[in-house]
Image (tube, rainbow, N blue to C red):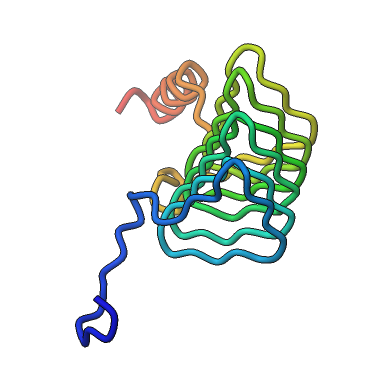
Length: 148
């Protein structure tokens, strides 16, 4: 409703914006909700929700989003707080900084990758613990202390 005094609450899980197959868009996009691109886009994207790049889409963009699915062609860097999926039809040329990365057979990724660990999941101070080495170290410590 135009002119309504009630603020509309945006659901980041729903697709709020669609760039259609016959659309060419140039410029920066900032969105609170999810975005689906089926056409062409030249410009950076900052999205609090998810981004889906359709099979026929061609995107030249640096992308920041929660989760990203690439089924079309993307040239640019991608930073996600969650998961990046490159489908079997997807082509991604650029660097990625993500928490989780999935590339399906036939998908193409050309660039460098960095995997993030969520701040809440860093138990043990971020150390990798080898179970066998830990067990051996503990038994050696017990033997040195007289078996107590």
